Length: 301
Ligand code: BLA
Image (cartoon, rainbow, N blue to C red):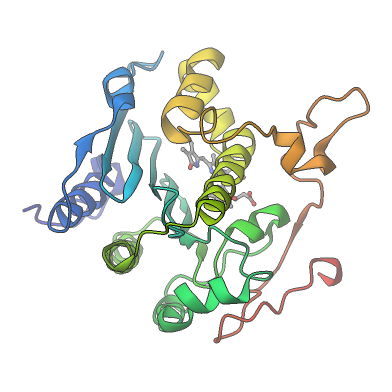
């Protein structure tokens, strides 16, 4: 379909991430039937305050997929954003597909992962179930997309041992590599989705749902993209976008609050500390070994 490349060797050509999204949607449609998600209607034509910026928002569901949604943002001659995620129904304990890229002319900040539903340092069974067989992906991309350096420490428990966290110079070559990694990671997620077997145990389903709710609650409150969204579309529309589109489910999948899950953010007056991180940044190097064992020690770094 699309011819690939970002055009003329320049990243200013625009719409860098559309081919990522169209690949993912086409590939998903080979395996399942996508139905527009109710949130799509409201968010598909967000108009930013600034004429040079374009938003594209799409959301779907499918038999095993509660929410698959994509947001791209392009500010002409300035930056481009991809925020793509897929969340399963709570009857499945599938990882959450997560691709986030913030690209300027100079550099791209990337998180690409199958975010674990259960913290893999605590839940070894979950780690073995999903990540043991796909660890070679790390080896494939470790050199081309190297660890991005110190990171908000809280993020680590939402990351898997195969996470690609990287900051690279925005060149056409690097974007080809990123596209290839996106394709590989998304195909793996689809394969896991295809193979997933429906859980019948009510308590397990409830636990899956609560874990997904915890993840949504974290990201809806602390996502690094939030301040920029507020700037682009104003505080109240940014809040709607975050709560009802990007992290839809945060108001319906559970009743616990941010502070119930993350009490360390409580201020004396009972409000949520606005800081992104209580621990600060750490992990100068990749804190998992080739087998996916966690080898990082936040305190020591
Ligand atoms: C930066 N985005 C970052 C960083 C990470 C992420 C790790 C580096 C800063 C840090 O250490 O936190 C992404 N962090 C994630 C993701 C998870 C996480 C995906 O914990 C999942 C659990 N990014 C977006 C969108 C925008 C965006 C939609 O996804 C803008 C609309 C922007 N991300 C953005 C910007 C920065 C950034 C501007 C650099 C500024 C900063 O570090 O605060």
